[in-house]
Length: 282
Image (cartoon, rainbow, N blue to C red; front, side):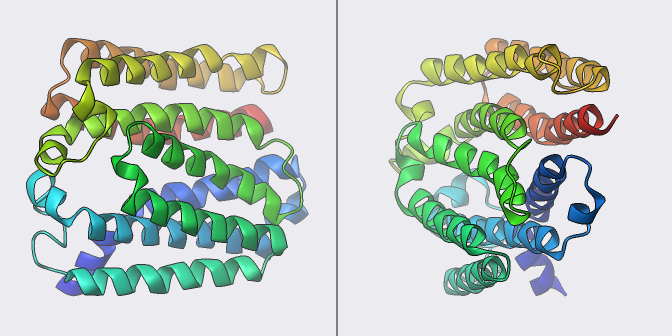
């Protein structure tokens, strides 16, 4: 049981659930209320594939970050000794194979996206994560792509662009905050992130992307794409929260503060997704 729990921690199920919901919502937004699409087996398969591939990405990321996590996150399965590095790599490879196989059951485009995601996750873990800002953009791009993949599964990407842009901007801000949180371990392992090279610029960049989310949020309502239900929820549940977090980040960019901010942002993603759902169907 302890081993199973350790592998669940390695996969980071909350992130996987977010990926599952994102792909499913992408299909829902693309379906434009067509109930036949919502019960399409392809939508379920792409959502599971998103969950599995993200879990694989988390595992390979922890495999590559073993030395860094011994400082930044010593309680994680690998640095704590609950899972061997070799086993984590095998776990990641198996999940990757499953994710690509699920893509082949959907259509060619879904298979292509699954392969692209796997290559991008591997490049990120082994190389790009330690490249200033580029690694952040890769993660954000893949997050936005999850919504588009949901639409691809049912052969329509209409309605997926707005949530993809929203996710890209939001995730970029959170990824930079996470880098600020990990500065100590990254410095000791010569990882060159925006936060290690220039913390002030990293803070300003994160604040810039937070601001972009706030500025972007009313646009779908103003153009008539989403209903007023979306506007109310996104203003109160996302924008107000982001303003508070941005003020906190500006005042205190310490490790403890950034850890709290990025956790708040992770939960706030659900609020944003809920706002888009309500704006689409109410």
